[in-house]
Amino acid sequence: MFMVITKYVKDIEEVDRWLPAHSAFLDRYYARKKVIFSGRRNPRTGGAILFRVDERAELDAILAEDPFRINGVTECEVCEIIPTKYDEAFAIFAERT
Image (cartoon, rainbow, N blue to C red):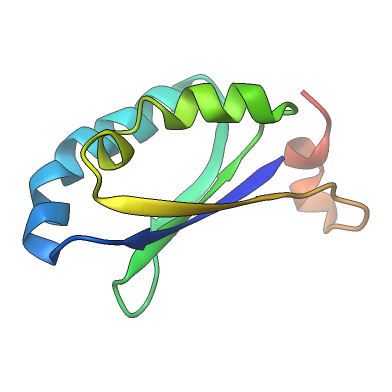
């Protein structure tokens, strides 16, 4: 599982220009059960996405399709997370894929 923290590196107008395409990108990976959650940071300086993938190579391939990344809107910090304790409601997500 990987947490991706994004930081906008372009004006918010440029972020908003690519937001519909970014949202469609996320929808594709929600449908494939690869994204657990996504959302904006507050204040609106970027976002966060929790991916349910086991390998960094798979994550990198997914991120390469993100219109925000393709168009230079964001920079990403990637952290691999191995859940060891979690609420029982989260167990379905914490299982290895």
